[in-house]
Image (cartoon, rainbow over all chains, first blue to last red; front, side, top):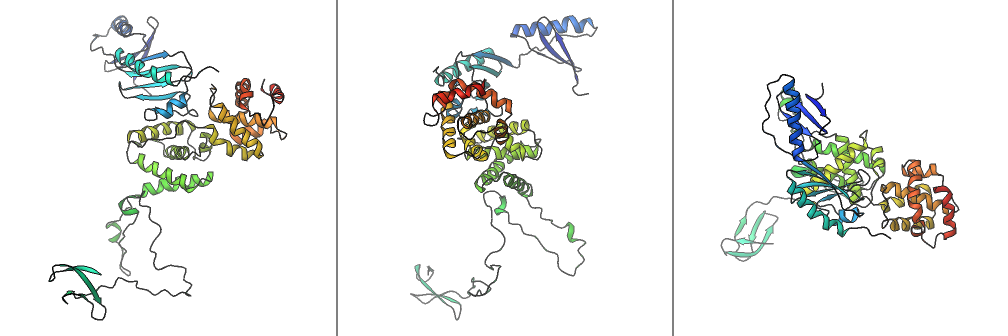
Length: 147
Length: 309
């Protein structure tokens, strides 16, 4: 009685779908936009139709893209947090990653000391590329040099 | 006294005649004001009169920055004595518009007392609360956690950081996760309204003095510990600042004559024993760089080997 949707998981492509009584469906976990559309169709086509519902596939839209990247060097988060204080939130006691709210494009990045970065909030791939273009030189400026 | 005289049509010297109450222009003799309202005090205060209540003061100190509408001054209409007060109860009960604000300030003050925090931190926490609570996006939040987070942020801004666990211990049951979440929320809100926080991340150095004095370390050891923490900043240590602080303290005390037990360091810093041991293991490879030369020589560092492996 907690959440009013069916959670369906399929193996190929490995995705999860939330199916609501209204007929709306959310598809999560695909590795690319095409894969997401394919799995939405697959979930819909194979399964719902087979169950006998008169279903149609309409209004497919990508809402969010999440990406991971690796700059391949250690980052000094404290330095980055103090110089980009307006965008960055870093509380090592609470969470080891730094939350960087980029304004252009409007996205949220979680930056870790290891150099791995999670980018989220993008609507299209180009935004992700732009965000990486913006963050890479900044991170380079706070590279931790091996001693 | 100077005032504008309509006959002379310029600002002239004006004198007040107390016997008749007239305000008279010195140049033409025109009476500008026929009545004089005496604004001196209505009571007499004598030097040897030991009266605890100072008649000059009415009410407590005003907090203009924090309470709105004229600094918390409220006017209430009292019921006339001897009259049945049935109807008066519903008439214009002046609800103090700041009552929720004052309630919050009281809670913050109570929490500060528990941690023995100075008034500057308390005032800063109040300011932060006011700034963020104004935005109304704090509706669904757990009140206690939100106030605790205000305090946490205030301590950091004053460079007198309190660890999350310390704040949690006085926060009336708010979970650490909630306090953390509220801290991020507050920081985000402050940034949006343009009050940038020049704090940066939690600094292990802020905790050192407090932890060291809790353990009763001597001055040499305290100095060495502070230096060691400064040195640790350049190194790539992926541990929470409290863990790093605790581990440094443990290592420093083990090197001196007055050794502290792992248990004591753990209770003083509120860091788990196994965390301290693991952090020591991480720090050990850099021990020679961390610990200042004047405190311990390299041979002594070998003693650490047994403890940290």
